[in-house]
Length: 148
Image 1 (cartoon, rainbow, N blue to C red):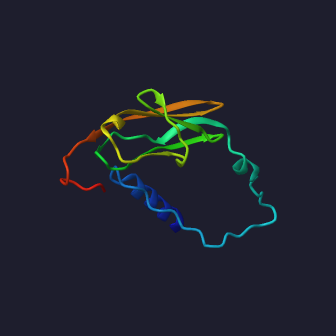
Image 2 (tube, rainbow, N blue to C red; image 1 turned 60 degrees about the horizontal axis):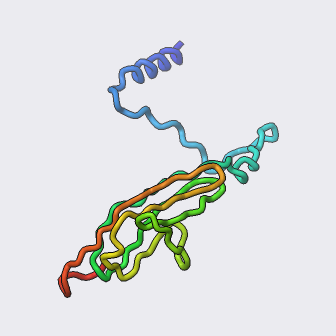
Image 3 (cartoon, one colour; image 1 turned 135 degrees about the horizontal axis):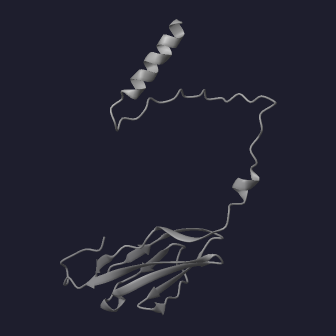
């Protein structure tokens, strides 16, 4: 009978918790899990072969400003299966992506003509996603600033 009273007290205490407070943490299991012969081992094929998905930007491009003569890297992060192909555009002109790493576009020694709208299009057989940002190139005058 004593055991039932204790359970009732615990339940009543849980009902009286103030709103917004997290419930108490469950018991943390020991470091080594014990496996018995009647337990089923999960099928690893599902984790080896993920479900195909269309491209989605998990990090979108951000607007930026840079001084004349400085370097800047526009970055994106894209998820999708199969891995999406990335195409980069500056004011609707497709850019040559030779010597660029996946997910980034380096613009070296920026000039005023580098300013404008940059768009990254990610495609795979299941779809397409886009991310765009504006780059401003500022002429701050000789010797008044350093590229970072």
